[in-house]
Length: 623
Image (tube, rainbow, N blue to C red; front, side):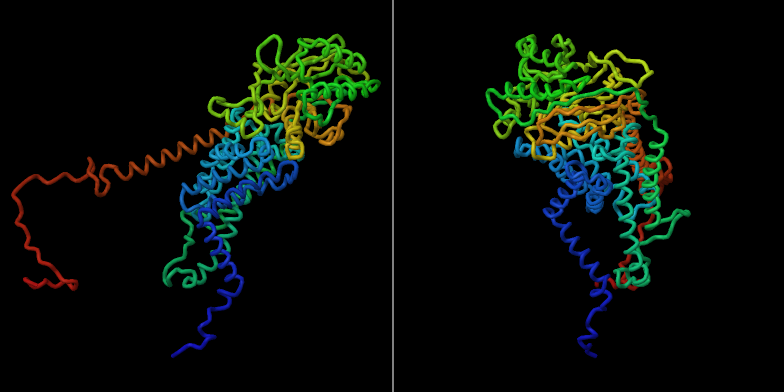
């Protein structure tokens, strides 16, 4: 019988309905992911998404789901090697997106550096596939993913935080600089704990997505075996629970929800019970931002003149300390006593010490240093801090004999700056202001940092442990004036303040300048990149020791223990598997437990074998 056209048509709900459309979309996605180039481009794009959580977009909430596309992509990799490649390409995308403002200065070298650092995410991509791949994970694997994947991410952040690899710029936890509960977490475990919790939430959302996809797919395979490709009479791919352990989408969703709930509970606990800084008076700090000064032979003189003019506007406003930005003085004060006298005269006029930053060749030591120098009414007080951690390629070129060619393709350092060897806590000439009836401290203790040193949590922690009551960062981002860099840099001060329980001043030459209180909340308004101004801030001071200052980078140490435990577990599992294959007495393997070979004796009569047909009948000889 011949079917009519209508009868030959496939069922509408299978091809024309929602299920059919979903299947077509799934097939298109599978074709894209099967393409090496399309998949690589998707990996780079997925890795770049978290950059939107940082300033200037500052979509802080997006950080909690930004890793999900990247994780789902690595999970779908057909092989572990492909998952590692997805991790590497995603890391490349992340590093380029977070540091894209370096492109005008370093050009193609930015991509080269990002590609090298992106390799750090290759093991993480492998871990994602190991824990999330192969169908909806069971409860134990889902729970492991919620612990292991954040630990793996922290190891990546720790390694790339080394100064020689560019420092800890763009740590995921830093994107939460304006979220008070996250800043409270930072006071407990630093930016590391915030990064870990953000990855926990991303992992939980990824698990929920996997469970949702499995829930959508399960009814089709369970209720219509023939349509799903499972022959009639055979079971579907969803296996029954073994030993009372639930399997399927629910077993994946429950640990995911538990992980997200744990993050929320920990944030609430930190908000309620973590030690808070105790108020300890206040101080008045003035920030002088001269703005853009045209480059040229006389640029250092013009900048100094502009800073002097702005500082004089503070006369009569009673500041306790005046802070200039990075490279605010282009002359060594010992070599140019006339400049030292001019700044000392300003200090007398204003009635406060002035913290300047000298970027010049020193007269008493060889090489160029960037140094924070405190100048009082009688000249330099003797307190000096030489910058310790230099910006790769911006202030020195690693392995210059090999990479010196970078100066020909971008604005890399023509001469390496020299570095200091220890941090310094300085004491100013003005006392801390207390409410009436309270005592007075003699001199404010300040801890200076220079430029991207404010990205290193260990440096601000050390200054706090050494007694600093106010943290200061002197910076200059004029090379990246119209990019996200100035806002990203200023936001780091909020995280450092929250970690240490000490206020922090971020003073720049060209913006963004900002001040944050002991809990990371902003004090006053910022000075933008288009401003040339002097602003006075009433900065609250605090005492007490945060958990982070006391215990340090404990989340990183915990993450390392988790990964070591994972490695040990995997190693033992591999050993058991191998020993099971070669165990004595195992089928097909010789050993002590195997049956004893028979004692040699008379050889048995060889049987007369007959070839047999498929039906079991002896074959006729000769055929």
